[in-house]
Image (cartoon, rainbow, N blue to C red; front, side, top):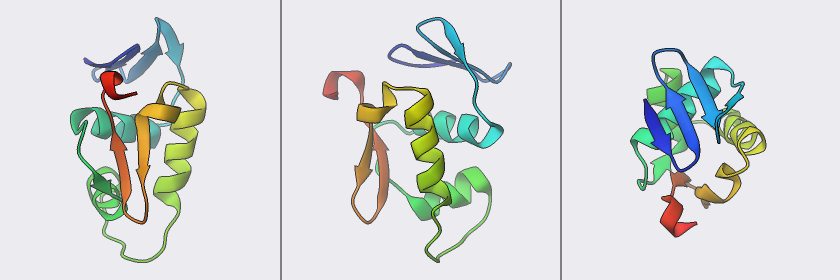
Length: 99
């Protein structure tokens, strides 16, 4: 299990909870959230996320990562502030003490 503030992520059962309530995520949203929590505090480029979460390299201008991040922010409101956009590069999940 992984924890980020009030967000719990059970890797075995692929369940995500927010303050004890289950949050429904798609498989990719789950994997993306897991990756952000595992790499908390690090700036992650869109290319790295595509490679490590989606399993392919794409150097063009895809919005796939951005769309999935938006969905995570919508479904888990605490991420709207904790999942920071790093302009023209990617994203960083900042710790609760930084929010």
